Image (cartoon, rainbow, N blue to C red; front, side):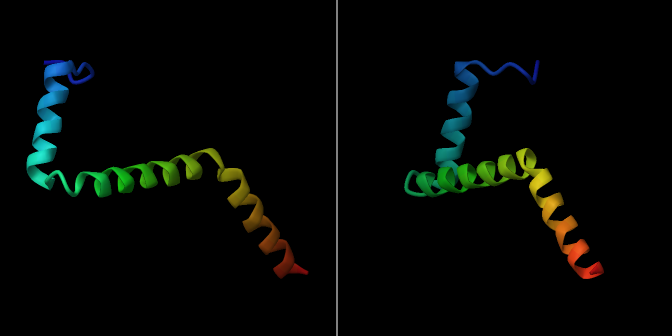
Length: 64
């Protein structure tokens, strides 16, 4: 079994298990939470220099 390749039957099985575990009413909440988490992660990964610049400015202000 290769872990990198998921076909349609495997994806359908995973989706069915998710519906059974969380229920159909909670799926929108779950999707929203996952999307929000991915956006925050992407933001943290793509903009690390902004955070570093802010920290450097704070250090410079403290030294003066």
